[in-house]
Image (cartoon, rainbow, N blue to C red; front, side, top):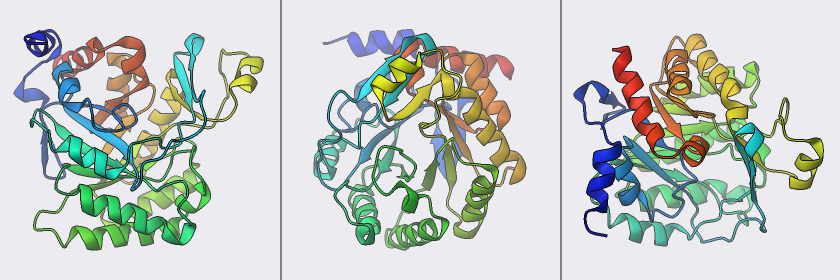
Length: 313
C-alpha cells in the first residue's frame, strides 16, 4: 500500500553513523540483522528492510526446491519464549530465490545462507554448496555455509573437521574465479563442546574464512519450563529463542576469548531484548541477528537494540 513503507521506516528505523560497522569489506548501517530461516525464499527482504535491519539473511537455499519435513513442524513454547522447528530446509529452490533477488531495491545488505538437498548423497554434498554459491554469487553480499542445522540428514559429516576443510577450500576456489569475491562465514551449533569449538577456531585459522555465526538451533532440552509430556508430543527439532540465550553467549565468549578475537562473530540465539543483544556484543559478537525474538517481541526490538547500542557509546 502506498505510504505504508514510509510509515514503517519512520516508526522503526534509526539512521546514525555511530551504528555503522565495517566487517569483511562490507559496511553495515547498523549491527542488527535478521537470521536465516525467516525469509527462506527471498520474498520479503525489501519489505522487512523497512523495519530497520542492518542486514537480512535469506535461505537456507538448496539447489532444488524441496518440501521439507512433514507438517506440523514448528511449535511455540510460550512459557519458555522459544520455538522448536524441524522444517528440514523447505524452500522453493535456487532458481526461485535468484528471481526474487533480482528485485533487490538496495535497501539492506543481503546474506545468502546455503545448504544441501536432503536427497543428495554424501559424496555430492560439496557439489550442492558449490552450485548454490556460484549461482547466488552476483545477488548476495556475503555467504553462510549452513552445516549445523539439526534437521538435515548426515549431520555428523557436516560437522567433521576434515570435511569442512574440504568444503570451505572448494568454495573458496570458486570464489576466486569472480572479480569481486564475497565473504564466507560458517554457521555453527550451540551444542559443540570446547574441543569442538577449538576445532572451529583452528578451522578458521587454516582456511581464513571471514567469520563465524554462533549459533544455530539446539537439540538440548535441559531446563525448559514446558512439560516433558508436551516436549515428547512435539518430538525432534531445533530449539531456538530464550532457552538457548546463555549457551549461545557462552559459545561466542569462548570463541572470542580463546582465539584472541581473531575473526568476526555474528551472535544469534535468544535475543529477546536490548540487554540480550548487548550481552552478545560484550561477549565478543561484532553483529547480532534475531529470529525467535523478532516473532515474540515484534519489529520494535530492532530499534530498541540500536538505541541501546547508541546509549553505550
